[in-house]
Picture 1: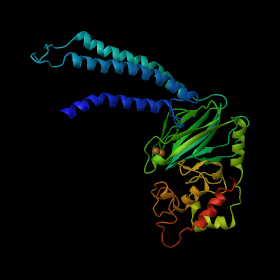
Picture 2 (picture 1 turned 90 degrees about the vertical axis):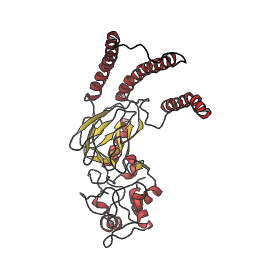
Picture 3 (picture 1 turned 120 degrees about the horizontal axis):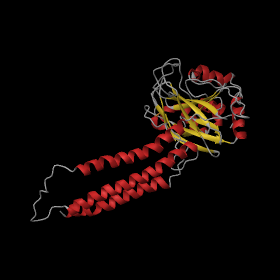
Picture 4 (picture 1 turned 30 degrees about the vertical axis):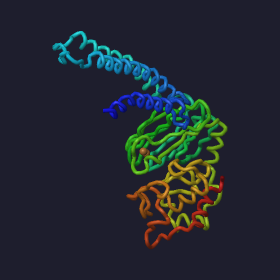
Length: 370
Ligand code: CUA
């Protein structure tokens, strides 16, 4: 009995502590993925809708829970009294009341909600940057085709990159979202709401960024083994910085892809079954590696790009991020997904085990422009 009493007296404290933790988690969260800290038009529209509705729902919640507690205490069982309350069939005014009041509340919430949905879905007018983003297992391919809709951007030739999507602060970025495998969901909380990415369909989402900055996101729909490692970031830049980035992407690789490095990546380890090393305008099965060095992350945006990480990854990628590649070296469409290990489970015959020196050589080529 004493234990039960202790547990009862501790319960309100536990509830309060839990609530405090939840609220603290919302308010001081600066991990770059806080939808309560909007950094652009669409994220702000969502936040401006969300906060009043949470307050309204909170007030209703407190009233309902409060009334439940008050009535439970007021009408609790007392010694020597009859437990059965007065038996009545129902109360028409009460029933009409609790049908109409919630209906009215929902109607009031629906008006700004629908208006916001339409505002967010609007296609941006005037100066607009366009990109196509394709959900892969487990990374994002971003492609900028030739366009002259943005002043001074000079996108005269296709640019293909991965996981890090560049835009100009103050110029809307309209993204066409595609998937060539399963359903993913694209979500950059500080720039806007999430959009499912569905095979066989093209969905659209527009980002507005007030100021230059890097905005983080993660795939928000379970898409297989490495869903948790499928990250992305939007990099909003000034006009000048964006133009510089485009020009750099359109250049050839920092070092000529020929001789020893070509032999290693094309013949010995067949990296070119899935990747391109020397032309950033080509979309391939795996990420385009021509300007990998210009990115800050790799491995589906889940790992920091530095030499040690990259060498480890080239040797044994499934050791860093779970893959369904096993000993697969086949060109697409293969049934395997992701980078194979070049040191473990390597298939007999054509494919040798990779040495650390060979991985260093490949990493050196990939990081040459850094
Ligand atoms: Cu892609 Cu989850």
